[in-house]
Amino acid sequence: MARILIVDDQPDLREALAAVVEYDGHDVIQESNGRDLEATVVAAQPDVVLLDWNMPGVVGVEALRRLKANPATKHIPVIMITVHDQPETRDQAAMSGAASYITKPWGDGEVGLRVNQALQNSRSSGGEKQTALGAAGRQ
Image 1 (cartoon, rainbow, N blue to C red):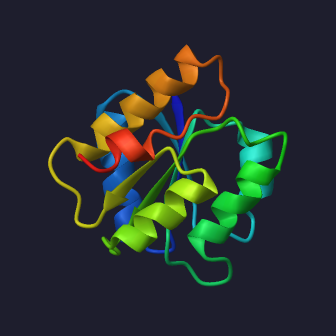
Image 2 (image 1 turned 45 degrees about the vertical axis):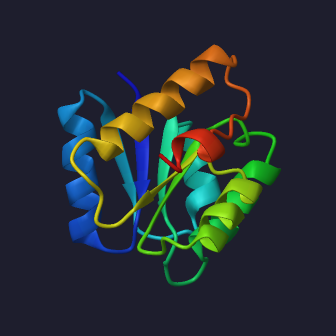
């Protein structure tokens, strides 16, 4: 069982993601914005972060960059979740350190698959930063 942090400003989407992740047997922590994300991640040390791209205050990709620049959080895989499905957006997420990328609405089993891939990649690398977006995010 892993600890998954879900960050989205829309409560219904947070709850939908939480239901999927909890069904797979993981513990869930929820955050509604990117402003407090670094402090939450440092305190909670989740195994994976599911991070919405579009949030008020701090845009998800900027929050991702901050997490990857912080030595205390850079090893934690972050999966970006967004309505944007353009190659440029996927590339920006990958270059910023995203482990994977999920578009809304996500398909059956997609969230669980991406979370499990991120967990496996993180465990096999000893917790070092893994960016599997190039392979896993474009399937």
